[in-house]
Length: 162
Image (cartoon, rainbow, N blue to C red; front, side):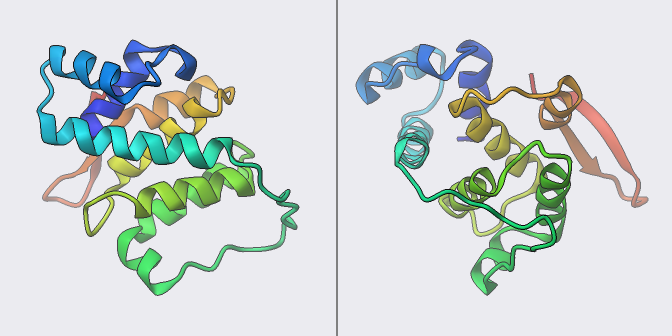
């Protein structure tokens, strides 16, 4: 499913360009070679994202000294690397409190029991993409680059997702 989300980002530069009708999007994804099960999951996930982005919410006026406390369920699904990355993005003002909450909600909506950092980055990318948020080039590069943990414990960059 994550591959489909990356495909949508790369194919449709703007979220509005992506077909809104699930049937039309499913046909395009099927023509691109994705499997039906993955397509269904991706369309459902994307529909949830569109829903939370479009719903009016109370303004988040988080104090810069406040911290987000994760529930046990969130901690189990969103590991320390993902939470640290989220804190980094907030501290650098790439994300605001509302976007942070959208990202956490969409991470919890994934079918996997635990979200890896590379998948988490795609979730961040998709939330910002759906909101048409402007992104710093370095942040965009970070979101589109996967990292892997090698046996010797060092992090190395591998092929970009794009």
